[in-house]
Amino acid sequence: MKIICIGRNYADHIAELQNEVPSAPVIFMKPETALLQRGQPFFIPEFSQDIHHELELVLRVSKNGRHIEESFAHTYFDAIGLGIDFTARDLQSELKKKGLPWELAKAFDGSAPISPTFKHVAEFTDLANINFHLEVNGETRQTGNSSLMLHPFAKIISFVSKYVSLKMGDLIFTGTPAGVGPVKIGDQLTGYLEGEKLLELNVR
Image 1: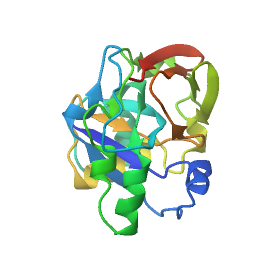
Image 2: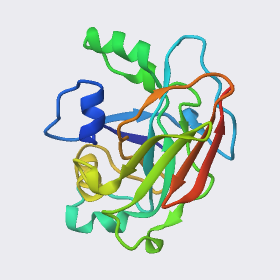
Image 3: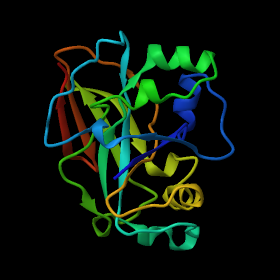
């Protein structure tokens, strides 16, 4: 399986990092070794002094497809969960200055924790109005809603599938809202989807 990630998909997050607003979805990938599941702790890697949390809605791809039309995109995922796109911000800044890819800052081992459970799409009344938020040590750090995405689910799936075939079991991280920030050893991260606690993670 593969992890497909969408960057710069919330205007407030683009503004906080002083990035340009993209005209098309920004895509990067994480390998399967980036996954953290079943409540495993996240270990801060030695190569970074500035690891940031980025909470995201995650789509679970339910069937294979390529060149998918937006009107049919909703049939290609069956569940939504939460994930954290851990980012080595110091390393990413260095790579961006040199015009290099972000993978070293985004795709390292353990950089993609996901919730142990996903909610079936039928449980949501409106996929364009999904609330989610992240608490760090009990304090709310990030709050988002799918209505604020620059590129909604259907556009993401259609765009990605023009370049990369989707396969059952793939995960799509759909972008993070504002409020990203550093984590430190001892932090406890808790992610909520429509008010339901779905993700708990300890930083070590």
